Amino acid sequence: MSTSVDVSGSEVTTDRRLRRVVTNQQFVLFVVLIALILFFASRNSLFFRVGEFSNLFTDFSGLVLIALAETYVIVAGGIDLAVGSTAAVSGVVAAGWIQPLVNHGVNQAVVLLVGTLACAFIGALAGGLSALLITAFDLVPFVATLVTYSVGAGLALVISHGAPVGYNPGAIYWSASGIGMITWLVAIVLVLAVVLGVVLHLTVYGRYNFAIGSNEFAARAAGIAVRRHLISVYVLAGVLAGLTGMFFYIRSGSGAATTGVTNSANLVAIAAVVIGGASLTGGVGRWAGTMLGAAVLTVVSDGLIFINVPPTWIQVVVGALIAVAALLQSFRRRSRRVT
Amino acid sequence: MTIADERTPVLELRNITLHYGSVEALHDVSIKSYAGEVIGLVGDNGAGKSSLIKVISGVNTADSGEVIVDGVRRHWRSPHDSMAAGIETLYQDSGLAPDLSIGSNIFLGREKRRSGLLGRLGFVDQRGMEREALEQLARVGITIPATQRTVSELSGGQRQAVAIGRAIAWAKHVIILDEPTNHLGARQSAEVLKVIKSAREQGLSVLFISHSLPHVLEVTDRIIVLRLGRVVRDAPTSEFTVESLLGTITGLNESPS
Image 1 (tube, chains in turn yellow, purple):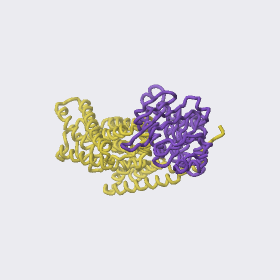
Image 2 (cartoon, rainbow over the protein chains, first blue to last red):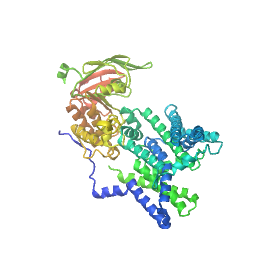
Image 3 (tube, one colour):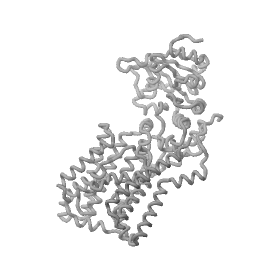
Image 4 (cartoon, rainbow over the protein chains, first blue to last red):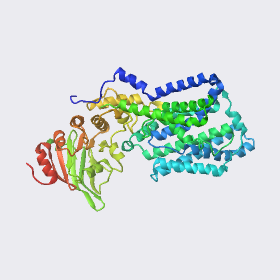
């Protein structure tokens, strides 16, 4: 063929390849994570104890599901402010529903399974409300999920009267069982996290998620059912938030309206995604980035407490981390631009 | 292209009329297009170019008239139907998903799946898509060493070439290009025109909509001029100059020689 259009662009030189690796958000985060662990260990040798690592894994698990939920939503071009209060309202409602089972001495496995399904169901309802407001009433995701956040936080308080709902010591007991530093609870969360990563990066569903966030019009023109996909993403985020509510129920043996609300879990989850290199304009984000972002946030929060830094300072450090991550991203975007 | 009249047109519109409320957008429009032919569709703003495209691609349904593809009378309920019948439309600035790789964009909405159980679970065959994307683009004369690159790393002309490459790759009969050289520089436009010529070599029928009359004169075999929803002239490109074409579009000279 005589006609030929060259779309190759300039050559990828070794220098450029090196710069790409060094400015790769996941690579940088991995180095930062190792450095942080070494730093905290050097300040207090007890940091390397199995017990402390077990705590780290548990705290990481409490964050990672809503951080991954946020990753799906942000990659699709949206944002979900409701995940924190969805965890609260799911935990509170489910705790009330399963308490009669606990009181009647029903097998703990059955109790927790029913609780998990209940939390997932309530989370799906919350996500469904956000999806309805966005797709049927054309609210922007920020406003729609703010509505869901408020409704969820309010309902959790109304239902619980501000006090823990139910009491299930068997759940607390089970939450500590496992192998070495990995409890069963943590193991289940990690398996789910891996599944979410596989779906995001290797399946058609995940591909549509990126396509819609990158260019909604192009996705629609390519025959992708954009509306249906967006509904499913917000419902998925709600379900993951609900499961996080169940996670905290199991750890404390009761449901509390403060779960995920007083610690602004929604904002911490968004922070993990941003630190992980995702773009809030959609279309860009990686599972590994969010995992590392959540890990860095967990190590920083726990580590600072461990070396006796007042907890009030933690948020300041988190803020600095977000700033550094955002700067790194804008630098990378500029160095990547090819003409 | 007069001998073309002996063959069956791949796309034929017969007596198409379309109203938006009380406004008549198209009046009794009949056109034919043949395999391996590039048709320029020109006209002033509001002449009915976009309406005509929408009828062909299934976005709008004509009030009366027939759409015939490859000798078979068709009725579109949605753009899906026209795509399934082998008609690809590249809308103005509809573009690509910039954060996805070139390969992923070529296969957007038509993802290749892995074989067996993984495929049924929705796993995409990324390597297969990158490889086939490379082949399909090469077929229309677009060479890309790395389809893993994201579209955001390409220039405007390169992006448009990839977008047209995608349309050609999937079109069986007709591709409709709505202002594909809009917002492009001279060199980038030249790249796009090359791709259009190779679409003709592939035996596709190309409908090229453009305001750039030099581009239309350079790449088309035949030009159809629309004015106020009617076909006012349908003639081989060799019969036109920029001046006579402009005159026909504006209606200042009804019979250019």
